[in-house]
Image 1: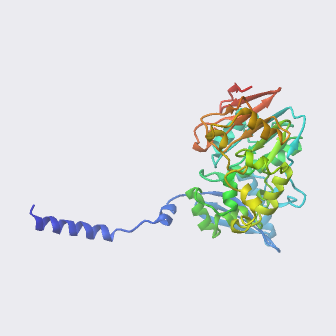
Image 2: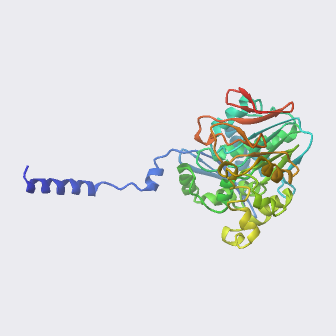
Image 3: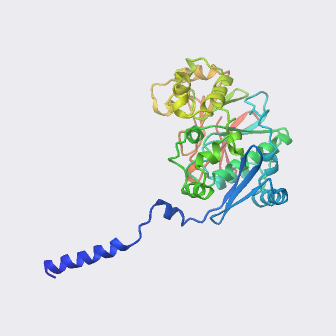
Amino acid sequence: MNLQKKLFSSLILFSIIATLPLHDAKSQEKQLNINELPHILFNSKDTTIMWIEGNEKLAVNSNDSIAYQIAIKKLSSKYDIPLSEALSFNFQTHKFKTRFNSIDKFTAVSDIHGQYDLFVKLLQANNIIDQQNNWIYGDGILLINGDIFDRGDKVSESIWLVFKLFVQAKEHGGEVIYQAGNHELMVFDKDLRYINDKYKLASELFEKSYDELYISPNTFFGKWLKELPIMTLINDVLFTHAGISEELTARHLPLETINQLFTDSIYTRVKEEYRKSEQLNFLARTNGPLWYRGYFKDDSLTTDEVKKWINQYQANFLVVGHTSQKEIRTLFNNTVIAIDSSIKKGKHGEILVYENGKLYASDPSGKRRLLF
């Protein structure tokens, strides 16, 4: 083939390619066939419940009382979610309890990142829930140490399950505590870099932005998530998502103060506004309790230093997530327990179990490994 023929062939090929339809991000997203669990939107005069089935947005409004009540029953049964409890939930009086003494048993899991199926498997294998996903843990405590949001495609399923267990646990003298992680804060800050493609399409179908769906004060999720604590103390074990830094302890902020600064002053303001405050900016950044990674990166830290920081919060042990590990492990002579066991990958993970004065790591089969 001579040069002239080659050029002619190239022009023909280019012309064909140029006529092919372009597929942007939106058209690719529309190839997904998604379902999305109900979202509740409160208005001054009415309430709307909306959900997605097979890429179709469905909704019912409280003004149509008969259809509304029928939908509540059907959706509650179909998706196994406590819609009635969510609709009647008293946000005025609700606060997560964050100090517990003389607790005989607790479990903790971190960084679920929308991996609902693995989350359920871990809870079932460790007798927290039964095969119908109902609470069977009696008066025990289940603590979610941050980062249900982002990455995976079952964020709503995970949040609804946590709320269902929150309701059921109280009926049996137990507790479910959902603490914020950096990815919850990112949603409050409208940093949506890590959301799953499913939620981009869901937002488009709902005609609501992702942060509007989850953190707006006019939604059930937004009202409930606004109360997420940052720190919880169970016996002498302190829980926070990322860790306690030397800089944080130097501020001498009590646990309750840190929790309140987030719920009252960080979750409720846009990032550009709250970061004008030096204190709030510090809490929400690198050396704050949601982002700190010093235990895993700073080789100069000593056990004595870390113990001193933790002791300031009336604790002897600290449980953190945030920094992914292959399995649950301990650091600084069992002072720090790192429980982000890479559940976010959806393949394997572990849950922290405390029983009879001992701490275990337990896998999705229920097999336990003694930590100390």
